[in-house]
Image (cartoon, rainbow, N blue to C red):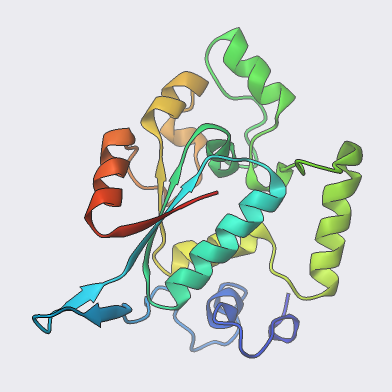
Length: 202
């Protein structure tokens, strides 16, 4: 992937190209200045976005990564709470079977975890659908979900795994990709939604 595959106006271009080593002076770890609005007292209120990601389908994963990385590139503090099938996306690609009992292992065998192994919710066609989607994305210069995930993490997007789902699926911290936040529960998410975060369900 090169800088030529991204449109010049794409706010993600600097972060994604920096991950690939372009340009040399780019620093993806520096988050943009937060976007905010002044309230009646003149104080700047920071805008937060909370994405609830509960699907592991390729098209929904792609949408989640595009929105999360774009939001961070625009200076919006962004968190992604991943639960149920969405949590499988954040398991390391190298993990083939996860879980402790036979049901957990069977579930991971039927639906292989990892961001590189996602299926389409429609027109999967035994893997032909995702293959065509990836070919089209490469042809038209669209970053892959994995590239977008790396860019989002570099720009400070916080990915929060659901503790209940980790327990139910038998997932351990060592099964997950690097850079994940501490697991949290529904009460934490509700707290964020009722404070200052705009929720978005995908």
